[in-house]
Amino acid sequence: MTDLWPDVRPEAARRLMAAAVAAFGERGYHATTTRDIATAAGMSPAALYVHFPSKAAVLSAISRSGHERALSMVTAAASGPGDAAARMRVLVAEFVAWHARRHQVARIVQYELNALPQPDYDAVVALRRETDSVVRALIEEGVETGVFTTPDVRAASRAVLSLGIDVARWYTPAAKPDPETLGAEYAGLVLAMLGAA
Image (cartoon, rainbow, N blue to C red; front, side, top):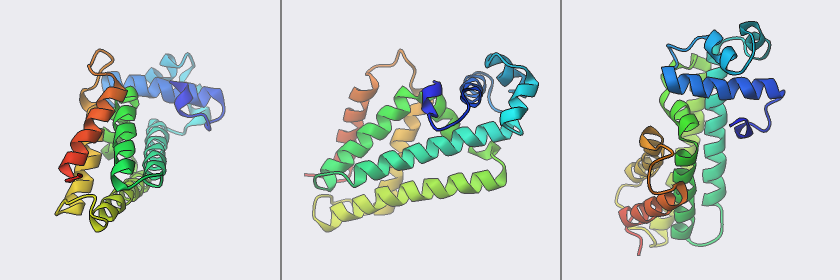
């Protein structure tokens, strides 16, 4: 799981983030201690403070990274080749598949927002708004070009993102279908919802 944060240095910080994901997933953010995180990473509790000033700082790093990755993924898909429907198909397929493949991290990124300190919460909310803006612009383009017929762009944008985010709530490694198939299925559902031909 440390491959999720290739830009985080040193390796010990990535190990702590991965251990925090496992601990938060098992116990919940509030029931997890810094000792739990450090022990799961094979370190002493004091070692955690070398890399993160608090448990909240670990959560903030995980959450911000996840939201930055989501924004990057959505932006790349929305600016790719093809008409609005083709780009929406890619966007939804990748967004859903990521939330399934990385369901443990995605659960924390998406559902522990209220535990973030206010400045970090504000930064994450700004990333979420930017992600929604990219999706909404793609839907608006589709409506303007006659590819989509949805009457309410704002509600449609929320629905598109909510479908992907909710996958993290229920998906497990034993779930069927696999993440890529699920992404393709959800992409078809979204295009039907948007009224794509």
